Image 1 (cartoon, rainbow, N blue to C red):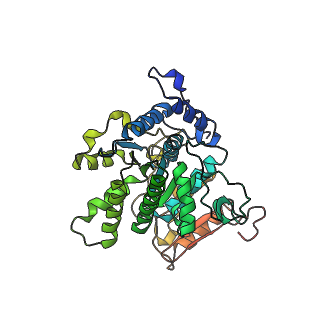
Image 2 (spheres, rainbow, N blue to C red):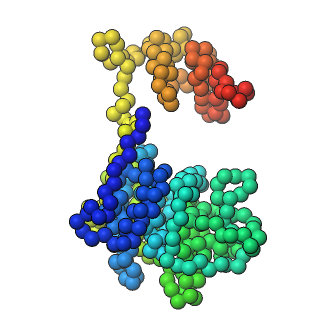
Image 3 (tube, rainbow, N blue to C red):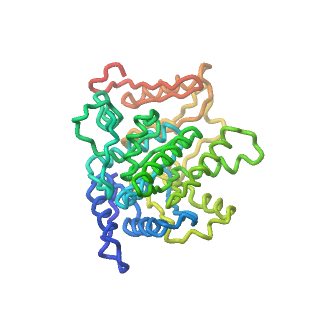
Length: 401
């Protein structure tokens, strides 16, 4: 199914006056095809709110940073929210610290950001000052993803927008990364205590460097998968889990550095709002600061989880005891489900009818039965010790499948 691109109103279509930088950010975003086609929210009001909060928060260090909330259904393209906030911040000379869950989540967001920004050229109000090191941010020989690499002093500096916390450990790399942050870069950080403490040190380094140049360093704090942070904090209570306590403390330390905006992105907006109510902070969030992602036409949600139907349109369900080891947990109803899935490209069938791994009628034998019926299917078997996959019809150029 082809996704329907959500139309966006230009800044000139709004009755309230939009700042020229908002219009510039709009033009930049709409000029990036991958990002433009992924937008599932009203862009101009979002950019305007980010702009207004930044301008209002500047010069008021005693005030608590305003909260903004964003979210939608799982896998409904929330990344553009974070990316658009970063772009608006960069045009104002403000960096973004983006916290997410785990190193895999960090790497995934880093890859998404760099992929969407590769065809763009984001200006910065701050002039670039070379840190005088031999490290630049460029394209490595062995990987298509941007990474830190050695380069000669004559090499032209690559466009640098997104940094990954695990790549800036040494003093030389930190000095280089500090220069990028002073321009308005995005530092993607996994939510471990150590990584967040490292992000705090980077912010302090940038603040000190900026102070030496008679200017300030400002940043936005974005929590991706924010519900995970709140669950961790709520589950602690009197728990003596030092790791979790340290993680919560590290987040508080980052917030104590006074970001201009606290932006929390989640698939469970209501749960986050209830948590903020308990903290007596929900009353400070205006409705204009809550942005919901509309799922695209290609989104597969719970509404599409419907049972098969018989010839009369009646739903077909499995009856108790209908599947057993005697029939390898397969009957005509299961086979019909397989057949229906094979008619639709990219279909996924999750089978949890047997827990046997090595006993008779186990999951491996059931996978073999599937492949006997549909040789082009790909069967993935997950057990406690390993994950294996195979197909009986290898793809062209992949004879070992």
